[in-house]
Amino acid sequence: MCGVCGCADPANEVSMTDSQTGVKVLLRDDHAHDHGHDHDHAHSHDDHHHGHDEPHVHGPGGEIISLETAILGKNNEIATRNRGWFEGRGVIALNIVSSPGSGKTTLLEETIKRMKDKADIAVIEGDQMTSNDADRIRDAGARAVQINTGAGCHLEADMIAFAVQSLDPQTGSILMIENVGNLVCPAMFDLGEKMKIAVISTTEGEDKPTKYPHMFRAVEWVVINKMDLAPHVDFDEEACRQNILEVNPGVKIFCLSARTGDGMDAWCSSLAELKA
Amino acid sequence: MHELGLARSIAGIAEENAKGRRLKEVRVAIGPQACVERGALTFCWDLVTESTAISGVSLGFIDADNDTFVVREIEFMEEA
Image (tube, rainbow over all chains, first blue to last red; front, side, top):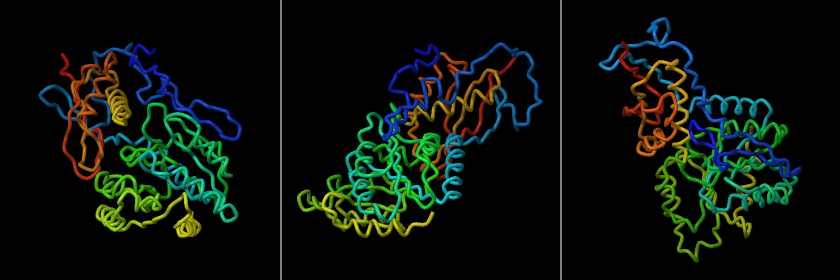
């Protein structure tokens, strides 16, 4: 275990598994996090020099330097690079977000089967553990890599940059990024996608959008899945639509059931119309 | 949760800018839409800085607009 911050929990590892070859690569080991453990103090503290460029003032305690450094700056830089790569190559990257169990993977499986002859789809799967989802996507007929975030609760831009090298999505293809099931953190982390799409299901209740407004504000499309179950769980579609539009008036809403196929045509044709 | 990663990023930015000098406080500006929970961030800050060069440095908060989330300033210890 690392004596500096105790970060040797194997669950902190971030790895990527290629569902075709089964090869697993470590993306971040215990020491790959941001502060890098560069705690060298061999230099002298004696010289209080003012040679640096940062604006600074003297406060009651000591010198204050103003920084305005974006805390998500590193992620955003890589996301911007990803976005440029996607645009340059003509790949439509979509960041699919939802709570666990809303049916993201089933929706992707059905989408892949239905669009087999119309679109080339590749998938990046994000989960804390297991490569179950990437295996399901491969069985549905698309190329997939699985990213396991370990303790992490969302995908970050560097993971996408790495996964894209391995997947190598072709011009005109759709890259589906299935984020870790979580309606909170993925809203904060830009991956370089064209847009975020939220999936909610009828079993979750109509008020998900008002409970998690950050996420529903960050998306351009919302899919309401498991419509076949609506009558059994007293789901009020109109109330759900109103809640979605209350937090994000410009959003496009799809009501469907990935299981029965109802509503899948409208979803697939909207996907087919997207331009990189 | 993601506050742990955010605390690590803040610690990285603070250490990088401190250039080895002793810090007193790191002040972070957070807007209401930044999606950041201050209590969780403080808890994680103590965890990630423990036994590091910036152990004991306090984390301060400044109210900001919208989704602002930046390290606004760092304050050094008074030097002899």
